Amino acid sequence: MLNKLKVRYLVVGGIAVVLHGVVRLTADLDLMVELEKKNLQKFFEALDTLGYKPKLPVKSTDFADPVKRREWIEKKNMKVFSFIHPKVDYKLIDVFVDEPIPFEKAYQRRQIMKAKDTVVDVISFQDLIVLKKTAGRKQDLSDIKMLEEIAKENEKK
Image (cartoon, rainbow, N blue to C red; front, side):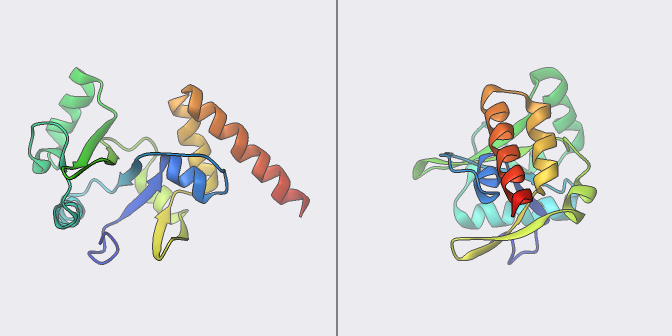
């Protein structure tokens, strides 16, 4: 649906790690979406069509307001805005409320990959490592180690 509506997005997080070759489980879909108003409107339309709603008791359109996003970041230390599927609790989509790296540059470096029957825009290998280093959590550090091992193996080929 995102591709159909021409939403500019990047798959990041655990699913991007898996798409880049690491074998591990992940429960949610992490996205970095271009935070431009028209793009966000298309993004919300896609999520609404798929049945997703904000996890927080706010309107999805609040996410489109840069002032509100800045307030969430500064006052609530929010990193991602979550959307859930009311009929299937484990279907969760997390969207960065800010650009951890400049979106346009990351989008230009993206890799187009196939996930099941869908073509998706995935953050580049190098940008994924930058994001993981920035987050610095235990799982992120483990992901970096695995990604670097894959890079070393690919160099040998």
